Image (tube, rainbow, N blue to C red; front, top):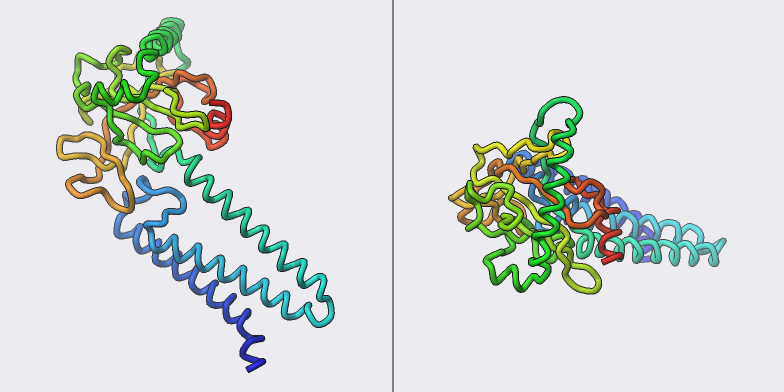
Length: 288
C-alpha cells in the first residue's frame, strides 16, 4: 500500500505528459480536418477538446512532478519540501488568474487578418492629406455613437466577436451599400471597448459591401484595408460571430469583405491599424 502511494506522483506526472501529448495529436487532427479553424479560435479554446486535454495534462504533470519532489525531500528536508509545494501552488494559482484575465479581459479578436496590397512606395502628400482628413471626419462624426444603446437602436448588432470580448464590433448590415463606402456618417461597424468603468466607443470600421469589391486606396500604405481569410459568413456574405470551433449553423467559412479600421483613440498607435497587441488592449482597458 505504501509503495502504491509513493508511486502515485510518478504515475500522475507520466499520465499528465501522455495526456498533453494526446491533446496535441487531437488538436492537430482537428485542424487537419478543419484548416480554417485556426482563424476562428483563440490560442487556448475550451471548446476544443485537444486544448482541454493539453491544459489538463500540463496540470497533472506539474502536480505529479511536485509530488515527486515532496516525496523525495520530505524525509531529509521537510521544510524545503513544504516550501516547494507552496511555491508551485502559488505559481499555479497566479497562472490561473492571469489566464482567466486574458480570456475575459484581453480577448480582442480570434480571427487572423491579411492586409490588402496598396499603391507601392511611400504615401504622397495628397495621400497623407486624404488619410488625415478621413481620421478627422470619422472622429467628428463618431461622437454621436458614444452611447452603445443609441447605436443598438440604430440597428448595430454584435457580429464579429463575442460580447464578452474586450473590443466588440457592432455591425449594421443595412449600411453595406456602395453609397456608404467610407462615409463617416454611416460607418458599417462600430467598435466599443468594455473597460473597467463602462463601455466606450474607440473606433469605427468601414466594410466593403461585397467580397469582390476593393476598398478605395486613398492613403496608400497609411490606409491598408484588410480581410479575414477564414471568416464565418452568412448566406448573403455578411460576417457572423463564431462562438466555438467551426461556424454557427446556417453560415459558411470563407474570405470576408475588405475592412478598414479608423480608431477614435490614439492608444493603439496608427489610427488605421488592424493589429492591436495585447499590451495596447491592456493599456486602453486600464485607462478607459
